[in-house]
Length: 211
Image (cartoon, rainbow, N blue to C red):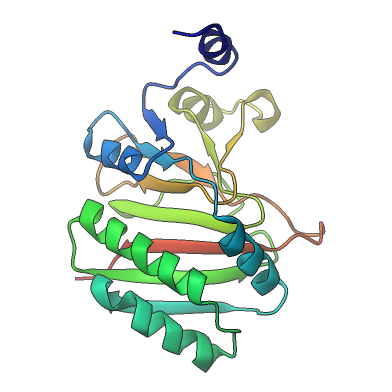
């Protein structure tokens, strides 16, 4: 192990129930019963980052689709037009690829997809999702905040949030969050509070489609 890696491990010690990596296959760790959060630590390609930053201030509201994963690109492209959002081919292609990946990890053929411009405090309380697996990524704006199992237990016991270590995904990072329907130890997380800051977020959420 290099000296730099040793310093990084000392400053940011790994959390046993969280898997992170720079490649998409980091998400496969969600299949491990001991992992409740798997994160692909990606950086958005510059063209996609620029396009989503422009979209952040050119659209409002949300787009929701219940669609076969292999039809996500066609369905989303049409939904963008119907919603009056500017066409963003790079975003459509990326969402379609994430839908395909999510469906593989969720072992489903169809997904429930939500692409949303968030301007307020959506889900600002720390919670666990009532799902098996949920994919979340923030294309622009701050990412989801989460707690280690230790801090989540402390919060449940009444420890003040200010005394805990809030961890946060970066824009572009892709995460699989395990929920209550898959484990007795789901990842505890929330949307970052942004009300009154002038910040906006472009967030993609993918769940398995309802049976």
